Length: 361
Image (cartoon, rainbow, N blue to C red):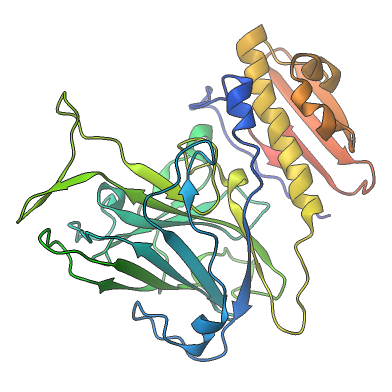
């Protein structure tokens, strides 16, 4: 496998903004990511917020969204689901959000859209690079999009000056909007996302059959009270706005979407060449991040990092099964470590991760 390195600078950000604090938090990050096979379009798609083309009628929906923290939390009270299509130049997506009271207020592009109820897309077309894209949209079809060069917890910052060039979006309301006195059914989002807006120079401007991306979807849902004329965000007894609900396609395990290693996967297939996703790459990636998570817990407990997988396993036997299929070598010096994980059955399949979250494939 071609080795591609991405290096994160910690000159300004020497401390993690979030680290797993105990084994329970580690265990919450173990649910398998969702997978969706994206079928090619068979007729022209008009971006109008409606899925009345033949292509849309032939493809499956994703599973319904779950709470971002996973199955240990109550199921969402409103259904959300997505379906996707592709051609060589574009990813198409269609989301349906059940909603008895459709509302939206933000109208200026690149405002912080999740202050309204919204739908969000997180895209990582290059599996071996830390960059990813976030797109948010509300029921007024107001879009916020940004580029992250790396996750916030590793010092990443949101680049709101970045635009998803030639993005097309539309929403449809089965009901009214901002009318508290009536009941609505749902609202939908339809998008056409050009590949050329997502990839860098040299990566190509087309999707290839069997290409795999990381992706996730989120729905932010606030608690509202309504009178005959106005909606208002619900407050607690101290006058503080109640926290929002976070419903997602592929649960993270904690309330933070910016864990791209925990997102789901999509694979672009065609009728002539439908191959299942090869899980070997994602299996070693998961082992790598699990060791990273446990090293954070170990340091919180012991005030230092473990210096071997044996030492780490003594305190956290949860990792014992994972180490059986890999050769794992630690290199430590003071407050820094680097760990190499190599498959025993496929020696060319290997990763390296360090204490600053730099991962190499």
